[in-house]
Length: 196
Image 1 (cartoon, rainbow, N blue to C red):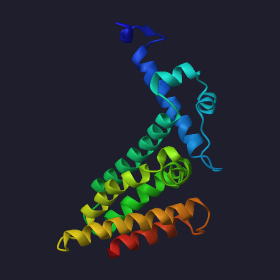
Image 2: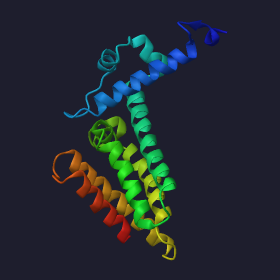
Image 3: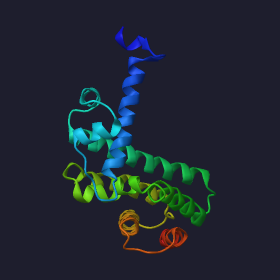
């Protein structure tokens, strides 16, 4: 079976997975570039130091890899939030601080990922609807942390409103429009969540 043959100690399946991961990482660099997203298949392959042949073993076209990069970062963000909340104390403010800190560590400490997640959907046509598609997943995470008792519609609106407010704060921070310390940003976001 071709996938079980080894070369240099790795199987064909492992080498394909490694090349795909290499292309995703190069895609984060290009889609999350400070000057704005600038990614073509040729530029991606050059940046990843792979030929186009290897690109096409994992992706069909440019839009396919852009979506894969975005989904990779989006999944990392969701998992960071889930892990932070599960590992924190049950006290609401501590849970909010853990979640905000985890999100900041992902998208501010590695601004490429922040730009992929929050800025690229504003300018890359392949992602124009993806930011809206992630909204329910992030709103659901916040909604689960809201105190019970409020009407379902009010809980939904609060969660969606908080996601929008937080996203715009992070967009402004990443874009240099908001000049505050990382700690100040975290504290402000925690206050927003705690007041909900």
